[in-house]
Length: 188
Image (cartoon, rainbow, N blue to C red; front, top):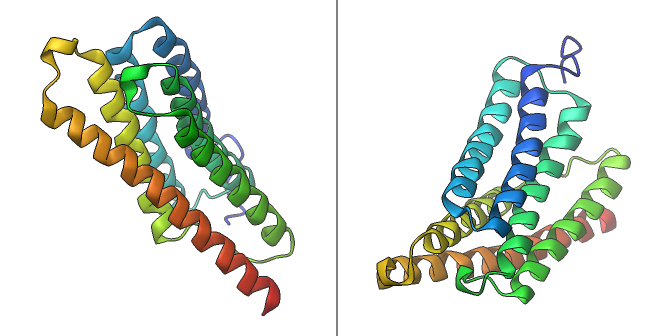
């Protein structure tokens, strides 16, 4: 971490913007403003990539950013899954949201415990892949919801369903992978 990085640097400001965008998205979904919610979600996801890129490229990684960035990621994804559960045509069932939220809480607790002991417990490949599937599932759910029943094509609904299932399966797999890794680190 850079000693020159300030708390109010560009990456942390982008993380704060993502948090505000998540709140806007959570207001839009219950009102059925799915297209606007989709645009807000896509901007938030893009700024997630941008803040990480900026922090590494310009050596602006801060301890606050290492805490807030994954926290805001979890707010956006978990909140989106929770809000989409109440819309029967979203393709997301309540048990799916419970798996997503449960995994995120478990990994956060494990990461906090290990990093407090000085062990690096950064995201792994399947954790990042899981995030891609979760984002695709949310985006496709919002796209399907934004279309009238008559204009929903079967390939779009099928693609959404595949992405939702990939999100759930990768969530379970990556959560298991993190638990196994934590057990190895603690026993080794």
